[in-house]
Image 1 (cartoon, helix red, strand yellow):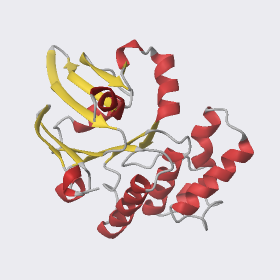
Image 2: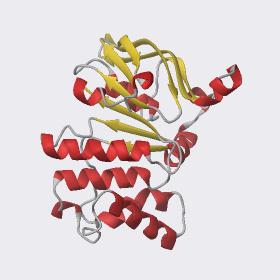
Image 3: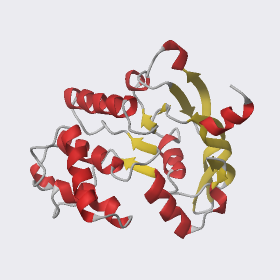
Length: 243
């Protein structure tokens, strides 16, 4: 692979990333010069204990928080050049979020919840409904389209959250402990959906998933382990066939 092809293959590049929080007169460092690259189509696990900085890092990658030092490049474009309006557009068009809490609007049906990001994009409503139904069928909720969120189990709501994250065909999925609120059996089912989504996407989808569980991290093909705001270990597992 030549240098130009390699550069085109990198969807995210993080350089010397720093983040701190101010608590009265005390500065608390959270990220301390983090560096890594993510190839397009990878499944990356951000592994670490509570307080290691992994969720803060995910929020910064998703432009939900600003960094205090260093830089992030998305397809060679620096995050620092985006004002708030451009961040909103960037998130809407390029990123799908899946959180530990499902964030479903209880007054809406699952179909309506899944369609919301596409409505903000101004897409044709008929096409959007068709796409939402297709995604919900793929995640096993074809029989629940007109049910409200509070009528679904936690696992079903997380399936709907995956469909919602995919509605705008993002190139990047950011998932924060997506099985954290689920029992082990339901969590395994959700991870199977992630594996199918990653393996058979209509276009290359890059997944970055926060977890504290090494068995979940082993499903990824790139593992970045954080400890006290620094990368303590990074492994590329692609050559071992772990997808």
